[in-house]
Image (cartoon, rainbow, N blue to C red; front, side):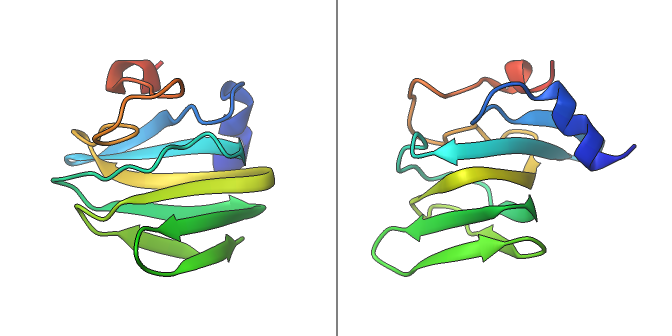
Amino acid sequence: MNVLEKFNEVPNYFSPKVIGEVNDTYIKIAKIKGEKVPWHAHPNEDEMFYILEGSLFFEIENDKNFTMTKGDFFIVKKGIRHRVSAAEECKIMLIENRTTEHTGDVISEITKTISEQQK
């Protein structure tokens, strides 16, 4: 599988797509553009972000804000409130437990269920 070619199957921003599974972990891809991701946390799971193309602005509540670019990865520890945005299209890979909810403890207009992410 070519991961960048799989983005052809992701028509919408903020819509993660499961592209693989390793044990109890999903490998997901998503395109980010704009500022629609709400502040949220994943109470029981860590979440890994890996930047494939573009740049991603990362905000962590009560901590640091930073920009990630191609080749960077960051692990958000469980319970840490965060949100991401991108001025231009950014392609990311996420590594998450199968139980990780898209927008964690918050339901918003962009929230996708785990089953929606598997389509």
